[in-house]
Length: 308
Image (cartoon, rainbow, N blue to C red; front, side, top):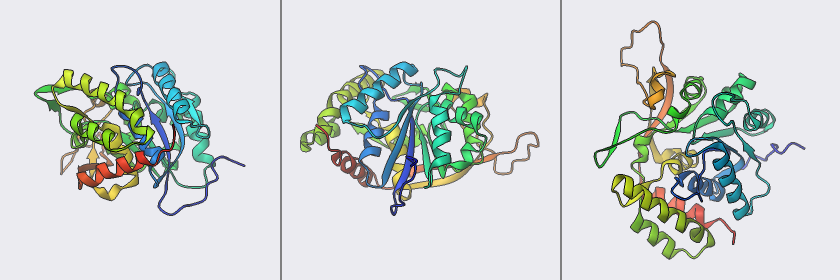
């Protein structure tokens, strides 16, 4: 029997997660790991597979970090597949797995990608129907305008890591939702809030989160002078389970592989008359409607994780 034969369970979303997780590596971003914990704990999500890509670190570092998380969390039944090492050869174990899973699954599947889009493009190179086979694709990456934190420029590090792959996914014609860096700045996890969350909740998952999160607070504060960090990838995970928590708009884009090398999304003018490049449409959430509910959902999902 295929592992992708699932019973339809009400509002549950079935998710394949492609990430550049570095939680557990000193001085490295932890948001992919926090998003993974949310996906595992949310009652509205069934995580059916994880693939790894480069971005926050090399593919080897990302894959090893994620494999350690699987071991620490006791995850045995969710496949973990290794992605492409670089843009030189995008076909990989992960790309093959993504294609196979979407073909075999008897339920609609959401693909969430929070690192380079290399594995997704690799899947398309294997099967040109891949993008259209997903119920939706949710990407964390890109900027609609340049971000500055305390007057210091913040570089985009997802779409720009493999701009050709990013362009292929964005312009695929599938249901593509883009969680930009801009909206993620609405979700700051302050060190004071983090300590309060950890202090109030005795579950082992919060002990697991505590040291990596405090370490990342320190690193991010040293870089940008803020008392916390932005929960980039968690925003994308919450969007999957609760899209109505977000205000969104359809955005016609003219971005191509060249312009995406900076991660900037180029919006088509209202009366676009350019004949050589037609705009394509993606959905871009622009506001988190209720921040209190946003954090309650995250904490509640983490609490549901049962491991020691």
